[in-house]
Image: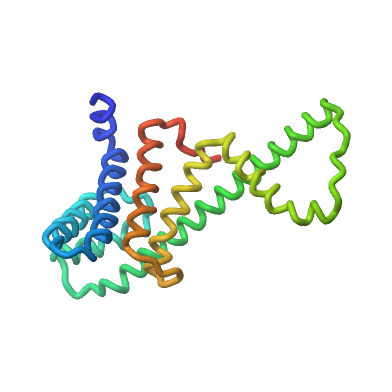
Length: 216
């Protein structure tokens, strides 16, 4: 209970909790909509999702996205009229999309550094063990290069959990603006699911600060 209180006392902690609740409501609403007799529950989930989304406006971590999203919030609560909702929603999604791409480029760079370290460590071990070559043919190498590459990526991420967590979070977050911009259409169920995964990843970094990726 003390850990939960400390978590909710942090602004980032509350934001991650609201975000997880928002995407959980979206996922449940998608699962319940096709079922008969669940109209009232679906409506309550939709209202809760909207309320939680409104409560998150104080801590959006992309400045331009924050501006666009705040304008949308001002219109949604009726403080201003004449705002083109779709235009500003598209602008917010576009800036969020660019921000996530930059974060993923950073993740890819960090992954490449980790891969170099894994290759270096493996070479040192093989040299110290003085093992004979395994004798794979060129055909074997051509058919197994993808498997070897994926194994290398897995080992690189395994030795750096914060990088793994940040990469998963950014990949999950990317689906939402891709859908809003029409680049890759999805449904509320999938967006709710990946949003929930991303929110849980974000909460882990708040509870365990050592799991947050350190920027260079």
